[in-house]
Amino acid sequence: MVAQPFSDARFLISASDVKQLGVCHAEVAFIGRSNVGKSSLLNALTNHKQLARVSKTPGRTRLINVFLTGKDRWIVDLPGYGFATGPAKERASWEQMISGYLTGRKTLRMVFVLVDAEVGPTKLDLQTLDWLRTMDLPYRIVATKADQVKPSKALKQRKDVAATLSILPGDIAWVSAAKGTGIPELRFEVAGLLDL
Image 1 (cartoon, rainbow, N blue to C red):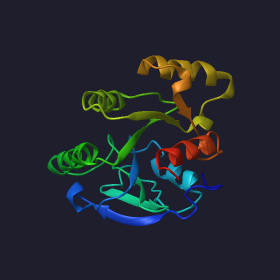
Image 2: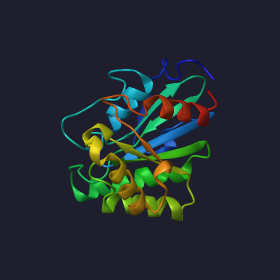
Image 3: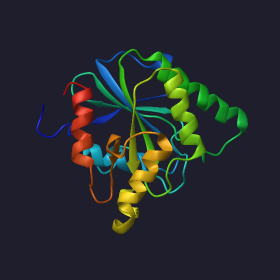
Image 4: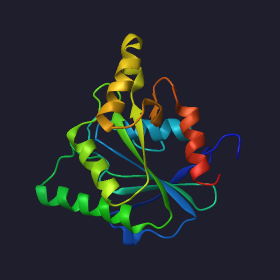
């Protein structure tokens, strides 16, 4: 394992259809609500300030964005759900694009589902997780913005989030892109999945 995984990460391609993507050795995908801090987390994981574009307007990621790291290893940023604006027909096509990607990639090792540590899992998060289970896709819960949970309430909040998801508190990666909490551990977990 390299000392600093993803230091070589760079943007590779944006695609509106899984068929536009080539082949790779291994890939992991990140998905979550539009304002869950996905871009900030990807930037923290790769130690790049502007690898993934951070926007003040939720729902700006509208394509499958692929970042290359190492030899043929991909980190994939999927469009957020929940707040994205646009015509209903366009939003429906995003859902089709995301499901097409998730079910169409044999090299997909893990889907990291981001939930807001302070807000907890939303109805849309739970629907996404149900769908991933139905499709028998591997997933891992990452609670973002952990720094926004008061330290005095952190333990209870972690238990509450886990209870809502019917998993153990230890099965959640509790992270903060702003403070760096949990980032090194998640970075090495992702690197291991990608055989880096």
